[in-house]
Length: 230
Ligand code: ADP
Ligand code: MG
Image 1: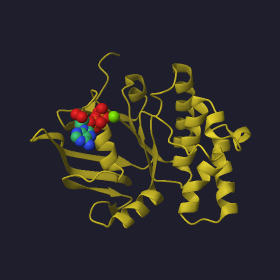
Image 2: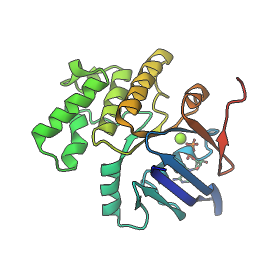
Image 3: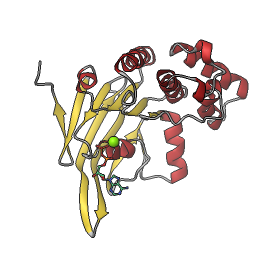
């Protein structure tokens, strides 16, 4: 089995008004290369908390996450950042693009941070933008793009370093239905063509159903979810 991400024994609680509130309680998750996994759960159930822990952005109280065989939380912050940059991509509900930079520059940025030469970075960024149907928008700044286009730039940026796994938090949550479908079809294509695994937090059960599998957070625990309505 070719695992790109493997988490086990995760716990996370927040101290709130003098009491510990357990958000993540003994969670384990393994994701294979190219697999599409949805994480669902009620609002406030801990989906974003879990995703951030899986992505090396929020330290668990205990437990470990391995990405491409490397432990995230046994290493220094510097090393963790390097593993993130090399093996993971992130997409959020709001695009988090840099408004002063063009689409091309935004997508090239992670490659430059990863010390690729400028010409090569721009070339690879342009290829990725072409793959999300934005070859004609390279020089546009985020403010001149539609919501769906901005989200496709964010997706191109997440994939440009050829990560093993992309973590997404409500990637289509801020888009109208039609645009969300369009973005989803680009995501599907990239998943097929690149073999990148996707872990997607969503409250859209239709989207969850279209993944390879879905897991649900209930009372801090993760359980497999299957749609009962069809
Ligand atoms: P979801 O993404 O499923 O809506 P979150 O992971 O954002 O849920 O939050 C889960 C719970 O943890 C919520 O009750 C939230 O209020 C709490 N929480 C999240 N972040 C913090 C924090 N930094 N400090 C205290 N409580 C937090
Ligand atoms: Mg959330």
